[in-house]
Amino acid sequence: MSVERTLKKLVSGVILDLDGTLLNTDGIVSEILKVFLVKYGKQWDGREAPHIVGKTPTEAAAAVVEDYGLPLSTDEFLSQFYPMLSDQWRNIKAVPGANRLINHLRGHGVPMALASNSSRSNIEAKIFHHAGWKESFSAIVGGDEVKAGKPSPEIFLEAAKRLNMDPSSFLVIEDSIPGVTAGKAAGMAVVAVPSLAKQSHLYTSADEVINSLLDLQLEKWGLPAFQDSKSL
Image (cartoon, rainbow, N blue to C red; front, top):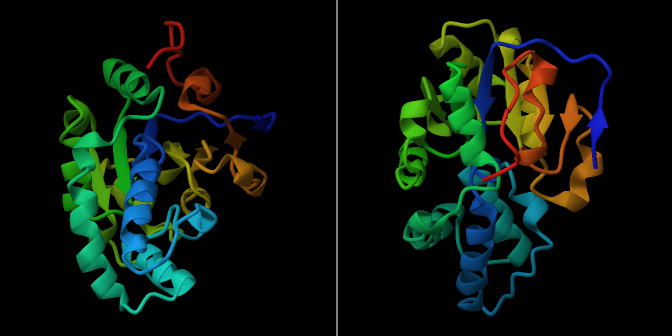
């Protein structure tokens, strides 16, 4: 799967999403949902995943409550589910190519920001378990630091503002459709790495769609090329 436009845009900075893009959060969420829903006589089979990927925590919670007809309010769901999830953050693995990408960009002095619909505190709790990640980002923006999360462009525009750079000078790397929509609305170039492979045909607004971060060719965007072989 590779959808490319012939003309690539030269950029000087990179904004990365976190969940699904750098961390395999979706896998952990699915495992915990399986356990959580059993308490209510329900079974998670993954078909509702498109309803929660890339959404704010509140939006994702509301979708699960509605889809499964749970006898809970959104706030009640979050109060029960999030402690279970936070207990597993230390077990969330980096996706293939994440460490390679972060280390490469940091080593070449490319400005980087992290922009996620997760709250700032949750972002920092997740990346705490990945050595060197927090220090690699010149700006970190959480969904609770802006008025509207993705697909609004606000979170990406705020990241650009904090780096004192023009939005058009950034490449956004995203796994979700709301994230791609937000990046394009911010006037940025966007590479999509769909976390839901069967949904890849829906990412047509992205400038490029790739299978994995290991397939990313930074030189297409005027950034330093990887010199090593593909690795984690």
